[in-house]
Length: 441
Image (cartoon, rainbow, N blue to C red; front, side, top):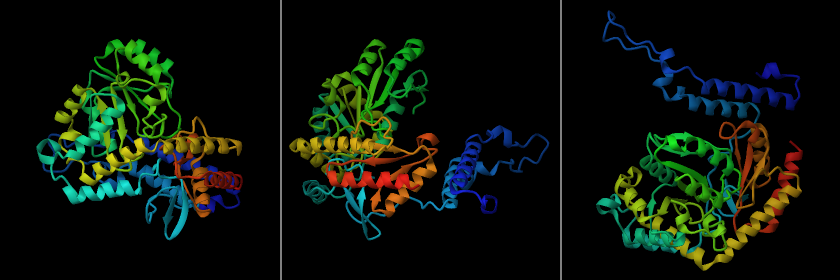
């Protein structure tokens, strides 16, 4: 490769390598199916002889997804782009962080309200360890129930104005277990389980309406899944329109508030509060405990029937150990701090708007972002995103690139997480360095 590229400009080299990576990744994605590469032993042959199975079906290093990852990694190495992932942070990651002994301005952590590291939250976790230990040592159904679990769930249910809530030990598992358990082959998921899945254009409720008019009658249950704040783009849906579609088409509506709880609404109670809706306007309110609530896990809030169903039958809850006491205590304490200090929410919203406006003024492509704590800088090239992230890291700014195939190549970006602890001076400096580094690529 190096010999073939000699004499070419850097821009041409990058384009050729990028195209080669994309071509090889597409080939990995379109690997031949099993029946085209596997020869099964036939009658008359030695029955003890093993079938000839392609290596990629019994070796992890030949797995197509792993090979995709290696192709992208090798391409970055050829271009001299350092691996931006798995940096070790040497303390609490807030608006600043320390990596390899150097302090960085940090835009890669979703510690939105600064509750991770808050003394009251840390003290609550320590007290829980003293009272209950580090683990409940059983599933909650069996003998893992602790008062902290119900206190946290009751507080969240009240925040949503619904009957009840159930907390899971993983945010991802919350969605997988809930959707996978409640919906099956005769159901439709509009947007994980054995149900039929369809996607509608981003945030386009009118397109969804047309889709449901055409397909609703072919399915038993239909689940519409949307996010409170979209984690890649930083925009949010017109929730009242989706509520109307829920009623019109007799569908379930699930709102994933991973990035909107603590971020939207006057008190930070999420997109429901932002639009002034009732808790019953959605069927499933999902949230995570790892962002605003400075802990780990997820939750589902809704009717008594929904929560009881999940507690007694959802595999991700039923067969998992109960949430660790310090984890539950930290989330509960962070929620209490949220209610006590709505000023943090106002500060976060102001900082998000300031970042968005400053970036736009500097000519940064921020896409669809509304400035609700998530602001992308769209580069349109994975190579450019990788180089830009590395350039900013050298300038003391930690921000992560989102690369192909995680997003389409023309949507590659840097993703900035804004927190209430960022100052306007820090944001002004970061955007200035971003614009300068971008011009010099």
